[in-house]
Image (cartoon, rainbow, N blue to C red; front, side, top):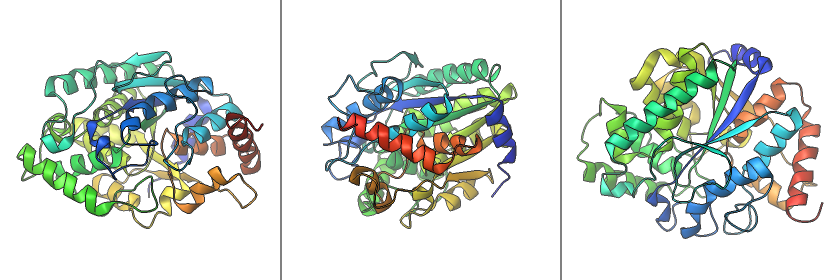
Length: 351
């Protein structure tokens, strides 16, 4: 895909990582997501991700966010990478049921309802939050050569799938999952029900309307931050998986000129996910540069981290962007793994 070298140069000149948090009641649907020990606890996951990223520990829940059988949040990877390169992070709350107990930038958004209602978020709230996000992007972009922006929102691939379908793209059978057993049938049923409830039968022209009907608070927030930063000459790395195709789709309709200053960074596990198609999704929207980290965990790594190799989690909490930034800044993979393993063991009380 496109040339990532311009983004590498900007990362070397200085960046900040932004974690955009959000929740929707879609994550409460049983069997849809493992981004939490139970459906009810998915509302705590973004807050816990943010708390771990900033403080190295959680406050909203005991212990780090895990899957039902103990797989760790990718925020472990993000924090470790930022620690090695001594980079800063900022939490941006797009709309959560549980607010992170860290210093945050509040966009004035709201958490999303179950998209099967056909009315995920009030349209006025989406517009106001996007306006605030754009101003945030402008202000940060004036000082920073690049922004790396990721997300934490359980069930985000399902709401992103619905948004892409509403905007006239083909996301069917292309979205990733935090589980190696991608619940594609359930996702398709949910998205079709959402589109029907929203009365969407063709492509929606206004991305704010599409997000309000069947999207989530994170998609417009990240897109508007990118638009604002691009407007003042900064470049933006969207740190994530297939959800970032939805961000690109929003951006194309919202401010297409910004796409020339946007790229995507992810993990090797997401790229190798045979149940998804990140490249194909991106190419539907715009041929933006795509980079990915080569990080992997061998047999000697603690079992919780080896779960990434088995297809669990794969991406999230801006992990891909942080790992790619570490590579751009010359951090050897062995040094990065050493930091990640050490941090992971400390979290478990074994370090």
